Length: 405
Image (cartoon, rainbow, N blue to C red; front, side, top):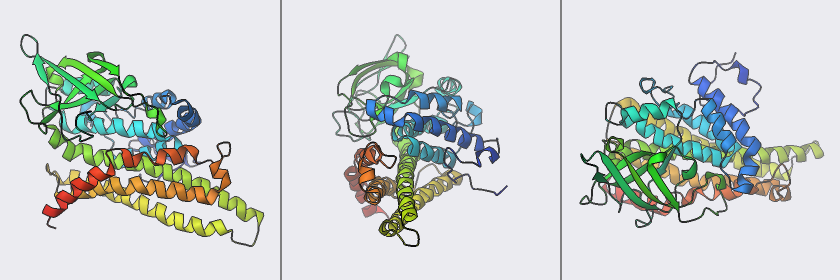
């Protein structure tokens, strides 16, 4: 058997799938490909009806992928960011909404994987792992204009012994909140804490009242089901993470979210490129001995796709190196690179998908054709709005002014 890197992406119908070794991380990849095949079957319906991809989530749970990134000591499989990135890519190519649900869940799971061991929340985390619970995040707030590094709401300790923690939050968007088993909520540490002194409250869904406010009627990523809510959570005080959220964000949230989001978007670009390549091959078969005009555009599109792929691969390697170094505080250069990853890939997916549409022509514009780009095209414009690129650009510019290589 030919040896292959774990980062190699195979399609869900790959004929060599049976040759993959059964042990982790290959088992995670195999399960991810199986879940991607399920997601692909329902992707158009999920998009059309704006419904949650329940079938794909069931497949992810069946494969043990919701807990795959947790260390073995906490009951997980110890799967690393490289393998999670490959699974996210496969899911993104099959169903963009499923891919984003997986990526957003994993970014929260990796918080608990890195920051929970040996703290009061560890018992709660072990239950999350054992039961394959789905994690959602409530990090945005209506009063902070999308600045996830600042909160207006705060944690209030209640109960006779201060053993309960209450948070009330007006969140303009919570992805798949109605379907989550646990909601991870950012808030100020206390009523007198400044807006940037945040903690993360990991509240079981049963401890959270959610009143819908802003409906989710959007053009893309419809299956993420991400309306706004008024949250009123009262949970055990031990469910407040010990590390401050600024540390959690710098070490885990920012790099893992950007890598996994970018991996999903790369999967979307894969799907678009596959459609374009199929159309060019059809054109070539119609005129044997000549090169179709679309082939030249395809050459340029492959170049854009390879750049996209290289950006994601480089980011994965950077994060692996950071983890291997054992460092706690990421360097400014590392943070700039992770910020730039989000900005670059959020626009690269649009470049590849729209380029594929040009190659496919009218077939790509039709909703009733295998080459249809409708869902991919609408989803491709969402990434630039997730933590707006302009906000990231501003934050990065401030770091660059102080950065010395």
